[in-house]
Length: 207
Image (tube, rainbow, N blue to C red):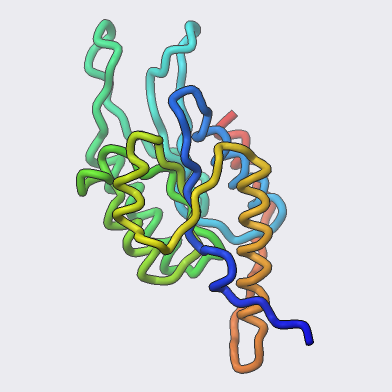
């Protein structure tokens, strides 16, 4: 007899663990926007890095996956400083974007990263907890230096992925199919849903 898969078979929380030379921001954004175009209901935020002609990062934005809005999260400390600090107002708006996604019961919540701010109790740490407590499938990225803090935060609830598109696709294929099977099981209600409009314009906001 064939058993029906359950949501417990594949961890619903996944973290791309990346090194300094990896482009985790680009990977997460590309995956998210491709899934939106395919009709998956995603919410949360992905990161867009603004660079100058020399390739030096000059600004950071988070893109709200439900609206396409670009949220500035960095403040430059001067033209010659070559560094920036996080903008409190931008972080607050980003937190609201994640909260809306959790409340909307999207198929997947994406949060750009669990990094030093979250590891020390700041940033979007509360929004991570909100998504986890609500039982939403969650995808994020974690730098290697913060991997232990991430493991302490989630315990044994998640899985870690290498920084490759194939690994992310394989996890989501399993996690989404099991979630659909669980929702369609006898006595359960709910739909996976589809984005009602063409979201190609969203992808262009991060290119």
